[in-house]
Length: 254
Image 1 (cartoon, helix red, strand yellow):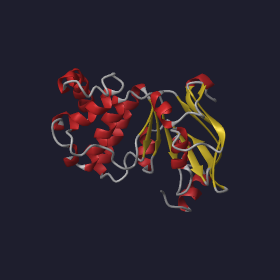
Image 2 (spheres, one colour):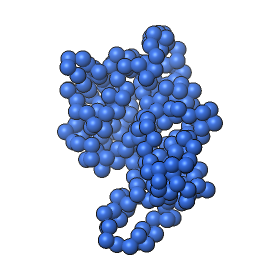
Image 3 (cartoon, rainbow, N blue to C red):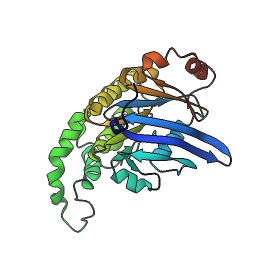
């Protein structure tokens, strides 16, 4: 049964993006239910990253509309979209390596808590953030690394720190771009468990190539191929779809 539109936190309607005549995304409809984990999968060149760039407004669509919480956000720029509570992580680790783990989270907390840009005030005025920093670090398993330089963390824990900084921005919709990319088996399990934990009271849209992670976490999967929706549904249904199997056999993941 199709979800009521009010249950959808974000919708893409007939979304199209062309580059010099080539349609990277071609007339895509996408609806993400509130408080769900929704995965975008597909072979190389399917249009997954372009979809992320369109939703976060790093790219402007050639045609179509994007609706967030019932409002058309198509004309907005990335900063406006971020202020609405749409926060994206990237494939490449994005932390401040010379700062401590705690200070990485502190920077992210400053904006939503209204303490940003007070450069003339003592650093002690930011002590009010300490309890929240500790809570976020505990949530991602990094409290014991609080005062270590972030650059010295193993790669998997750097990704966990990114989750903490993303959560500090209090996102309503988290877009996760390859959250388990480059991780060993143990770290994949840790990040998958973390995604499951943080999804309890927010919505997650993720691009992920590890199908065991997708099967474990995703409520709904949208399969893209050549810029169009090939199939959509739960993992049990998608994994048995002959067109999806053919798409993966016929191309390598990006």
